[in-house]
Length: 457
Image 1 (cartoon, rainbow, N blue to C red):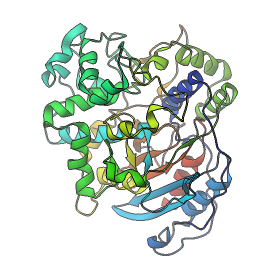
Image 2 (image 1 turned 120 degrees about the vertical axis):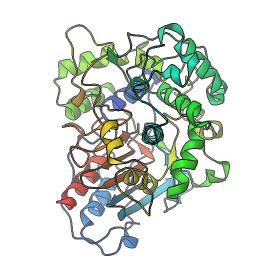
Image 3 (image 1 turned 90 degrees about the vertical axis):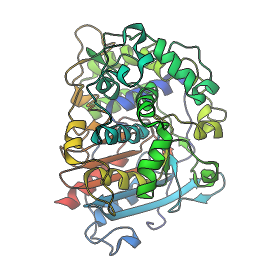
Image 4 (image 1 turned 90 degrees about the horizontal axis):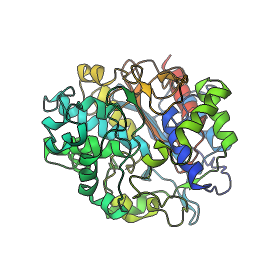
């Protein structure tokens, strides 16, 4: 824990549904965890043993963590953890898990991590690939024969992982209860025709990604994605992380608050995060996230997730949502588990290694630099390293999304959370927060990553 530094802003709120959904989409497209922002690398030396927050030589990360509580957007409650070479060197938490009850954020607090969940799912898929049970270049129908309807028989597994399958939406109609039940969404995806010729374009599959990759994992392993993750990842590593939260874990979950975001802030944030000019950003927002756009429809999941505008009654506040498996969006975790999980993809952690170097190398080759983003107007092109630098299920480091080194890979989530690994430095990094900022240039995770980078030198 860091000293009592929780200077927090007033309660936030979500604006109108269209802006929220647009912000979620744009945030996903540039890494809403904010790794494009400027960090705070100044600070004192380490504070001694990691039981006090940081190991010797890692004090700059604690300084950056403290600064986040008084910066903009600030923090309500948050945690950050870093592993290097399989050893925990940073373990920080502070603030409030629930403003209404004044419940403090402690070492056992967990929180929803949104699309950071996609990294959990990708790791599961690549574990099967490492074992030789999943061929990423094989057609999906090898494992899931019914998927081949409506012209999808030639789609390889790698296009599911790299958001190139042309299936970001489900026409529906679907209910929330059907989405929680899993099989109705799978039947809908089997019948769904691709929006574009698969493999020729890409677009963020904000919700369907979890069902698509999750069903392949289920067909191979006989386990749902959440159960596979629990048995094969979380249990061996002793993680507090779930896709499908057990009811007994509910008291640990932090309450999320949302900050506001208007169109001007969204535009300026994207300009800062990507380095693209205002005209390009404006055209991108209009084409990609306007009413009725593909991204707007993607977050709806055929109507199942339409109830998002009012945080008092929205689906994501319910026990049913947390109990179900949405392997693209509803993971619950703490920062320690994110860091430990990613550390185990690039090093041994207490004798556990999830992926080997050859698997990591294959998994992290960027795919979206080879295809054009779907839905852009003629003449507009958004480079992958400024928008959606996606490999096979993982975001890759790039100029606007540096993490801690050029070989880094991981996944951010709407609101600010992120987990990533740096194979060159042996880093596993996790950051979680319950004050959700939808700004693409949110500096909180970036300041922490910059501090880690400075400590590695």
